[in-house]
Length: 331
Image (cartoon, rainbow, N blue to C red; front, side):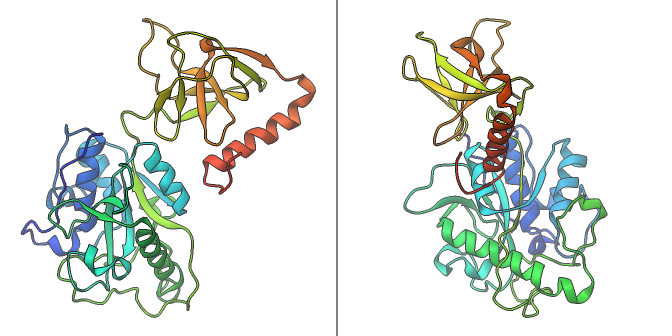
């Protein structure tokens, strides 16, 4: 897997103390374009209008769009959805309350700040996730549980803290251009200024939604659209080239000969590599297992359900949609 060059916010620029998001966004841009487009925190900052204090995800979205003609997605969702984006090969940048990252994994003493870190879609080992912390000089490893706690604490602070006392609407919801936001929601390496939203919050309540940004990878074979038509039963044809696509990581795996599964017709947004010129490498079936998998139409025989099963088919499709949108249980 391609690993982007880590970008630090400590670049000597005037706003380096406030450019954690822009530095991480530069690492994301490198990853997203596989090294074709590169930036720094200071350079990224110039492509949007906010030149005072910290930035929010909408600022980074505009910098990607106006400076590099790339699309960034802002999510206000749960940890499971973040893990799903990583599993699909996307690098994410997540907002955290830095104090909940253990001191051994931080690159400055003071953690009482809002901060943005990047997470690469690389395998997690005993040392944790692969993290681009712009206060550090290189990639780090941080435990997923620590990142999650820090992200949910940051969400609690902006959701339940002074956003309700100062009249700020919650940032990051809906269109970034339409939202007000705190003047300085992120601080960088100076680390000496209390966060403006840190006013005690609303007690100990935690909010599951967290704020993060991601982008579609050029290698993304995991995104699809539902197709009209009945669900049914597929049976895998035998053949040396038959492979199913595991949506979790985009790997092509040889199925068991004669395997049968309940399935729903879908079309991938990106074709599976290989095959004969002009062959349809996108249309096929999403089938049930402990995780989402896909087979091309040409690799299976399909038997549709009876037409009077329409309600059951709709219910089955909803179960898949709910799961893929972050519901905890697999269908």
